[in-house]
Length: 157
Image (cartoon, rainbow, N blue to C red; front, side, top):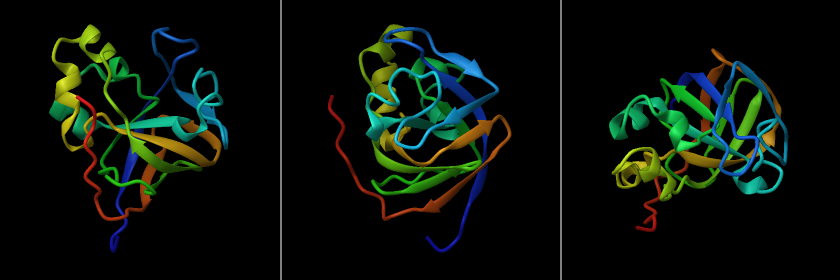
């Protein structure tokens, strides 16, 4: 990637238990080899410790329901890498993209047709492994540090 792009963090959410509703917070600790403090999946599944959703991609799929997508962080102003191994910094936190976030049937429970709307162009966001942890807060800068060439991945469905 020849030019570094920057955006900003505009939302932080976590889910304290399986099938619990997402809770939005103003700031959160993100732990290395874990995830967002208070989120039930981070330590259990370190390769998907943090999920990121780009506001622009989300709006292309469906506006105003980002927590229904069950993403931890909502960002704007930067296009996420569409490749495994991409590196994204959110404030002091450094994240490695491990896979596109796969939409599941829970999306259609929130809004009929949402699952299908999230399939194209990595609209559902990305899952990440935490490389460097730290505390993030609304307004923190977001930067793509590494963006390998786009990789076309066929999601199930």
